[in-house]
Image: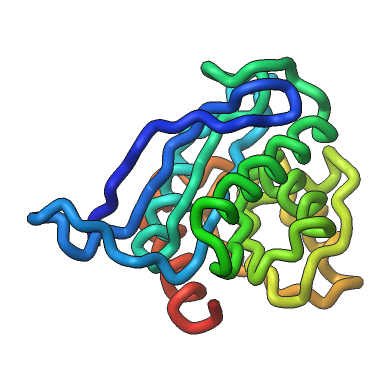
Length: 212
């Protein structure tokens, strides 16, 4: 399945935010998009370290989710790319994520929400989940140890590399163990999953096909 992509802007607490909307396309020869089963919002890594919605892990997540039948939005946090505002250490970025989700819920009313994020974006999604109550969370190398990660729902998908030198697997285990959360560990993978993005995509596709 391919997807239809549109660059969009939507209102956030700090001004306009830019994003890319991916729609599942089951009739691409005629330009008709398929009706989505879910909505998904994908949050990117730390802005002050160069994180944007075009990060390869973020785009891999978006592609996997749209192939799973999600109308999927990846977007730039405040102060990134053409999004208004300035980096806010997670508080404002959580508001951005809520605004992105509200935009998707208004555009596709009644559909279950999949919240997804990579690194800092995983932390932001975990925080936003308390208000947004997603159907599922997909967190890739969430920034445990660098930010105060809250607890997450038991059906959260966690994916991590055992060679991650930004967020260690040990830190993730310390956070996940009291919650008894399952973790998919990619042996030999680092924080950015270089050379492992296809495998990462397949894990998300399998999860969405059997769990969501």
